[in-house]
Amino acid sequence: MLLIQNIRQEKEAIIQRLAKRGVDFSELINQALELDDSRKEIQGKLDDVLSQSNKISKSIGQLFAQKKIEEANEMKAKTADLKEQSATLGEALKKAENELQDVLYQIPNSPGNPVPEGKNEEHNKTVKVVGEKPILTQSLPHWELCEKYNLIDFELGVKITGAGFPVYRGKGARLQRALINWFLDKARNAGYEEIQPPILINEASGIGTGQLPDKEGQMYHMPVDNLYAIPTAEVPITNIYRDVILKEDDFPIKNCGYTPCFRREAGSYGKDVRGLNRLHQFDKVEIVQLQHPEKSYETLEEMSDYVQGLLQDLGLHYRVLLLCGGDTGFASAMTYDMEVWSAAQERWLEVSSVSNFETFQANRLKLRYKSTTGKNQLAHTLNGSALALPRIVASILENNQTPEGIIVPEVLRPYCGFDVID
RNA sequence: GGAGAAGUGGCAGAGUGGUCGAAUGCACUGGUCUUGAAAACCAGCGUACUGAGAGGUACCGGGGGUUCGAAUCCCUCCUUCUCCGCCA
Image 1 (cartoon, rainbow, N blue to C red):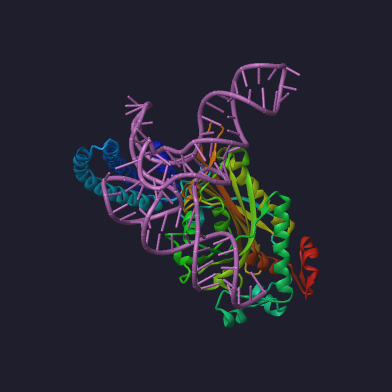
Image 2: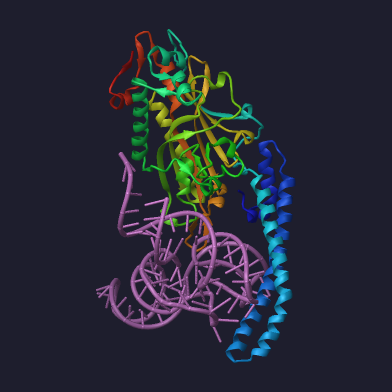
């Protein structure tokens, strides 16, 4: 959520930056400002009324103390009108606040300066391409490789749960575990504290990171206890810092965590969701940083470099995209996507997304820090996948296939306990 | 799941209807003193909205109610603790 104070101060600049998303938000912005004006006006009136009635109440107390019962009762009569006014104004205030919030919830984060203008993925900017397309003597897609080597059984998952819930087995399961451990060890070596959060969250947490109230359809919901299955570890980990006031020298806070992730992915079908490309349940190691506003873009680069280091270690051919305004997520100010080349599918697969949310999440979370001047200010939050497993597994399987079997990347061998999948 | 107790500022802990946004202690920050430190002493020390400012308003687990007035009374939800039951 954007800060109404910022919208007020830099209205035109924000409208301009938002326009990079390919949509004109000036109307909503104006609406927000008008609603905030009326909110202020109502609050001012309400405060006056309350102030008067507080004064009267106090004097009634004093009169009682002095045993001036009659005078006190006279004063009581005066409050009836004020009471009615404060009830009316109180309701009006609540309404104004809710309306303002509704409008603010509809406004996405305003893109950072380097973000290119554009409506969709066609306008994303390729920042970097690393490595080369592997030349394969055979090129089976990963779903065929999974079957051939008995690594992942998609049908079995359908039987147990439904489509999008694969069963990993044998070397397939071990490869999963190896990747998770290796990712976590790398993150720890890079200074991230490992977190094992709950994978079910309450409503307040969903609101804190912006999944609620709008995107509940994308999460699995357990109505009996009103809990949601997390779509990413970002949700529970970032919510650790909900309603928290940090000290300035706490920065940077670096957390990582492995969790399964659950996404309903309502509405996606077809070739794009074949095999591991899109799942309802998958594993991911997430990295999260809280940073001082002046350093968050530096940190975004650092996190992007970190994720790229993982891809390089795995020997994968990848590219880095700077997402254009229209393709940048609702809450993000700037996002890099890392895409790995899938040799058999002959397409790029998104394996990581690293974003700077600036104060957009922190505002909802009420995540602040006390600056050296003693003032509380919103912190910046960033996160990224490091990494999501399914597409990494797909790329490793496809790109490393040989007639003799699938060659396990060297860095994973100590974790897997085998060199080749055959 | 059953029975009981409790939730107050960073922590501890007073406060059971009226000058309580809240005593006191610890912690923290600044100052005096000191070559420096400690001790002692003095001062400051929650959050948010609003106002040019003085100030005003709200917040004592969350929500609702009673009252002229609620940290204090009532209802409800949540959480924690103790005992019992069940159980990885």
